Amino acid sequence: MIDKKELEEVKKLLKGKGYKYTSAREKILKKILSLHSHFTAEELFYMLKKRYKVSRATVYRTLNILVDLGVVREYDFGKGKKLFEHIIGHKHHYHLICLGCGKIEEFKLDDEHERRLRAIANKLEFNVDSIVLSIYGFCKDCRGKSSKAKS
Amino acid sequence: MIDKKELEEVKKLLKGKGYKYTSAREKILKKILSLHSHFTAEELFYMLKKRYKVSRATVYRTLNILVDLGVVREYDFGKGKKLFEHIIGHKHHYHLICLGCGKIEEFKLDDEHERRLRAIANKLEFNVDSIVLSIYGFCKDCRGKSSKAKS
DNA sequence: CTGTATGCAAATCCTTTGCATGCCT
DNA sequence: AGGCATGCAAAGGATTTGCATACAG
Image 1 (cartoon, rainbow over the protein chains, first blue to last red):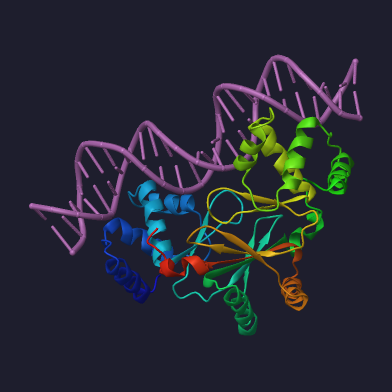
Image 2 (image 1 turned 180 degrees about the vertical axis):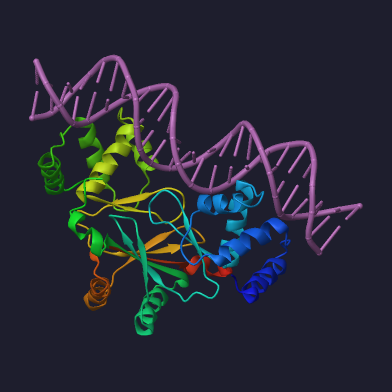
């Protein structure tokens, strides 16, 4: 189901920063590592709630810690709620967001391209932490409705 | 203070879509056109409130209409609130967001670069509406704190 | 033991909405 | 006149927080 190595890796990260490895955190972590797509905090909470007794607050708090540790990445595609995805063992990528159906696809940039983006930041004396590149538009299935349906 | 031509342009756009050109909308519009940097809905509301009697609801409603008309662009850099900027007469650009002080700088991509991004979307049968490219990191002044201060 | 972590509910922040009234066209 | 726009306050949705209790190290 999940990669034990990844779990150990995160466990080490947690302890390294002085966080305790509690049973609630383990349950949350395992669930996150088992997901390979984007999810919201609420979705995660409800998935866990089915089987375990974990509180919403702990889910939110843990997500924030994991983002801080760099285990999870957080996105805001403007829907009023954050989307998360774990990045352990996931190649770096960007997103195409369909304004019609909300579907999110991923794509990669070739190294050359990426180097250039970093070069731009460097020229501006900026230390890059992360690059978020999101293309909004309409997917194949939603092209018809393209004319930006008046909200 | 502001470019009358731009105001007329928006006025036309509003009427073209069946919206009325009211005095509240004119005040909001003039203020927005006078700003040349990002602002939140609340900031805009308080700027207007100093001199006029405009309600928060109208400010929010008007912003949404303007986004819809393509007069204003909306960003979500993950601070829990939306940032707006008017794009009439503003060349297309992207952002560098400092995780230290929150400062936002702008940068442009050369055409070649931009063409390639669109090509990627096209290959995935995606109709591009807009491209958001944001580089998060630490600006010159905040480089010291770079190690991502534990929130 | 000692200090975090957890759960719960209440609080917060931003944004949207319902409804009665006001104002463009 | 007729309908969209406005104001107000209340509602809504996502996330955070205070506090008493439970648990990892």
